[in-house]
Amino acid sequence: MDDIKILLVDDEEDFIKTLSERLDLRDLGSETALSGEQALGYVGDNEPDVMVLDLKMPGIDGMEVLRRVRKTYPHIQVIIQTGHGNDLDEAEARRLGVFDYLKKPIEIEVLVERIKAAYQAKNNLLDNSAGAVAFAEAGEYETAQNLLGK
Image (cartoon, rainbow, N blue to C red; front, side, top):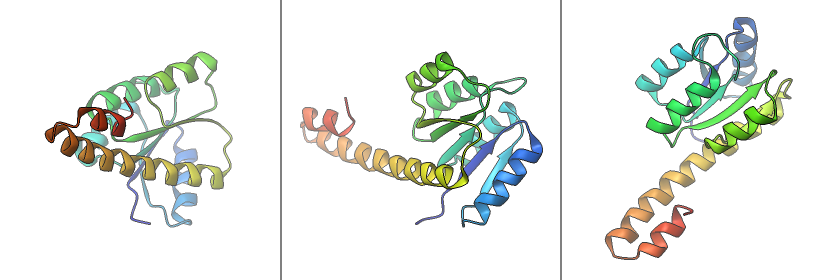
């Protein structure tokens, strides 16, 4: 599999460091951010493929990071990982287009599988977007809309 650019975002420094090390042992390198502000700065400079995002953080929380990323970088796949979320948070995250919503503690193999699935979804989205443009330019608007899932 291609190198997946992963950004881990969590305000618990020990947790995120350990998670990054565990992913690295599975040949999945990652970058880390300890706040919503750091995450948004990283996304603006590096555009990860997949972001694993904690929901509850001081300052800019995970839900606001998700909103901003969705608006500017809709192709970045976001996986919420939270120990404090509730059904309303999950419903809002799904409405905003989160790839997955996982509750801590999460088995590392489950997270690895979800990261790989999110990366594949991103590639499919980009492929479908390029195909949709080609069909739209040819006047095949219904086919273009179907490719985009609309």
